Picture 1 (tube, one colour):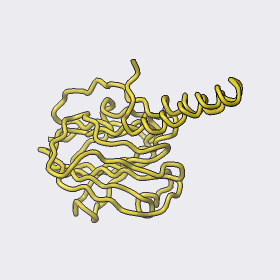
Picture 2: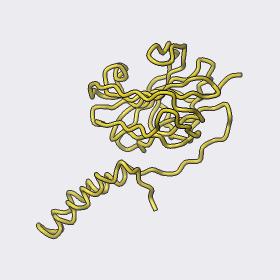
Picture 3: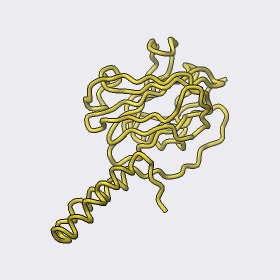
Amino acid sequence: MMKIAPEGYPYIAFFLILTILFSFVIDKWASLVPFVFLSFMIFFFRDPDRKTPSGENDFVSPADGKIILIQDVYEDGFLKADTVEISIFMSPLDVHVNRSPCFGVVKKVTYKAGRFSPAFKPEAHLNNESISMVLETDKGLILIRQVAGAIARRAVCRAKEGEMLGKGQRFGIIKFSSRVDIYLPRNTSVKVQLGQKVKAGETIIGEIVT
C-alpha cells in the first residue's frame, strides 16, 4: 500500500468528497474533474520508503529533485563558517518529503516570511519564504533550508529544537514545487554534479574528507 505524508490528508479528503458529490449530484462524467485532482494529490503526497546508506562519513540528499547549484560559500546567517552549498530543485512530480542528511541534534528551527518567486532563481533563498534548520552533528554544524517557490506556498518542518534525527529520517515536507539548500562543512567532498537527479535519504551528495 502506498504511504502518504500526513500533510496530504486534508487535500485528499477534500477532492475525494468533491468526487463523490459530483458523481451523485451531477453525473459520473463531471466527477472526472475532481477525480483527476484527487489522483494528483495522492501521487504528490506519496512518501516511499528509502534504503539509506550506512556510511559514517557521508551525507545523503535531504530532498528529491535536480541539483541546480554547487558552490563554496561563507554562510553568515546561522553557521558563520565556510561551507559547501548544494541546492536541489523539486518539481511537482518529485517526492516532496524531506529527510535528514545525517545523524544530528536539531539546534535551531527558524521561519522567515518572504516572497514566492520561482524557487530555481539564485536569489530565491534570500527573498522567499523559508524554514532554516541547524543540525549539530559529529561532523560539525550543518544547515538545511526549505525554500517555498512560486507554486509551493507552505513549507513544513516537523522537527523540534533538541530533537535527535537519524540519517535519512523524515523531518518535513514542502507542498508543491520548491527548493532545498544544504550547507555542509568545507572539508566535504561533493559526490554529485549539476543537473543530476537525486533522491532524499538515498543519494550520497557528499563525504567528509578526513
